[in-house]
Image 1 (cartoon, rainbow, N blue to C red):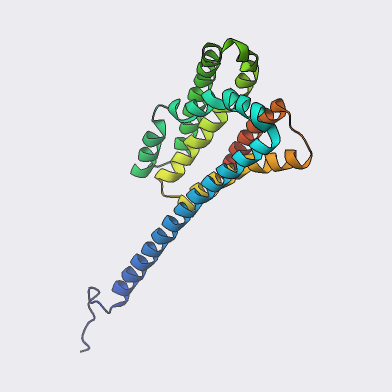
Image 2 (image 1 turned 90 degrees about the vertical axis):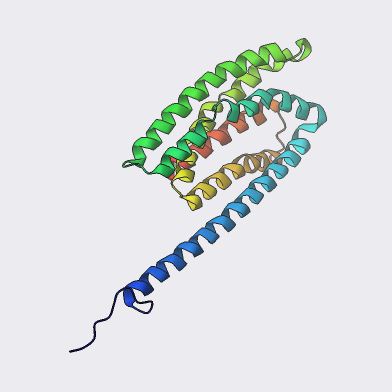
Length: 217
């Protein structure tokens, strides 16, 4: 009678399969970590490029006006979500039966907070801008229209982050970081330097980033 082979032996096929699965999982985690760090550095670099392009296109005075126009929108992009991104990511990490339903809920939440923060940004523009700069308020309101797009996009990315889809998460946020600098390069190449045009490009880049996120889902 031939001796049986225990599946728990370190050299058995099941044990080897489990070992190989662990090796692959560890390799995937390291690759995700490297990609995340690389994507973060790339996003930082694109932000720096964006600042340089804005300075070249607008000049000192108009660059300051652009900062005033976008200030409250930038502040409320994350503050206006009231910590919802962490809650969404944690819910996704716990595991759900239907991630599409979670994504739809995240989109509804992002739309609601986005619309609410548009109102908040509008109010802050009229309160915070000095009288001599209040003519910039309409451009600030136009810029605030990107808040629903940004909140929906960030909420969807939180779902990806929570469920461990780091490659998609990092790819989409890197593409989003490239949208506005690419639009600025096009404007610079065409010799366009209007503040209102740059504000319109800011909103358009946000809408394009949301479209990419939705198409990638």
